Length: 452
Ligand SMILES: Nc1nc2c(ncn2[C@@H]2O[C@H](COP(=O)(O)OP(=O)(O)O)[C@@H](O)[C@H]2O)c(=O)[nH]1
Ligand SMILES: [Mg+2]
Image 1 (cartoon, rainbow, N blue to C red):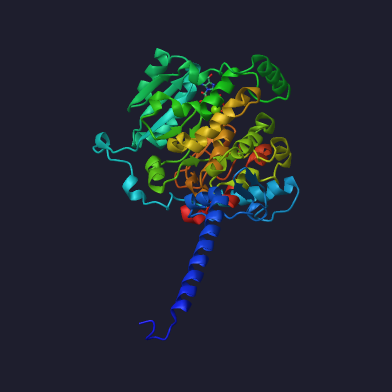
Image 2 (image 1 turned 90 degrees about the vertical axis):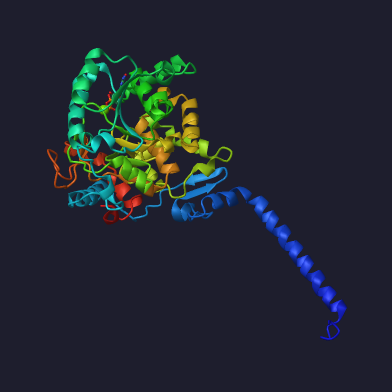
């Protein structure tokens, strides 16, 4: 056949040898590349749908490579001005958006998650969710106030169970009052000391010395050890609480807060169907000195071993790093804006907080002892974790929920809004520079008109 086509066998042999050589070289190069970049390569595979590219620090504000995790504020909206001018520009953006009339979220079909009728209530198929409140016996009147508002706004329509949590046993008076206020199920949990008390590893001398320094700096609750316990517990211990293991979602409430709108859809099912992991209402700056080493410790963690893999390339990095409204804060914290979701209101998927990324990172934070040597709050801890490990479109601003915890709130323009002033962030004008919602709106939020 070869002879018939006038092709010489030696030529065929040469072509075959060339092909084999080329194939082998190609394979070696490919293997070499794969072994050199195997970590990054695996990372790309894991995040195949994201657009991470190496060398993105200057262009996109992040670099997520083994032992080379860095973030940079790149001023995506090209804003200019003094901090005061930035505050004014940002507040204008915020007010314009919040004053617009809004309805319920439209990125999910709400028709299937409306309140059940009275006859449907006993068999209502609830999400795997619970309302939680860490509270002291002495706060009975204040938590009762919250619950009245909360029941009216949301929970009387769905009857999700409550879990009251305390470092001491709840008094009979407390329980009886809650029984009167709440028709649905409720649990009263006393915390095991290991989830509440400071660990034995804390150096008490160092703690006392630092508490005094922080007190002199006028940092709220600096000397109150129970406040430090509370912040550490809400940052990590809570996700290990045995009684909470049966639930996936929680809505956190606090004493003396207000709910100013009617919520007529099941917010837990809303999170579930949209796959969102966290919902908030208020975004604000923190006291920088209280979290001086939170961001440096976080970077230390991310640059250890293969921890870079935990960072989600679609995280809210620019929101975490914004440095125009309060540049003095970024200087103290080593880069973090201190902007955080105000955690006295949270609707969250605990699977996120129980996941490997958040858990490993929290364990690192806890090992520093800085919940006691500084005064790290659970709000910035949750927020940095979410900003790094969750994609930004899975974090939801419940713009439609009217909420107030003195002195800040979220007061939307809905047909049911009551008591609050639409668009007001704080009841005190001089606190308006504490609002960092505009960072969220401009750097992390999808087109607002797509959601509401
Ligand atoms: N059981 C208990 N709850 C606490 C303690 N300290 C704070 N809390 C609760 O933790 C939450 C936050 O505390 P809060 O005093 O409101 O702090 P703030 O909102 O930062 O001023 C509230 O729900 C409190 O009831 C404590 O020592 N024991
Ligand atoms: Mg409070």
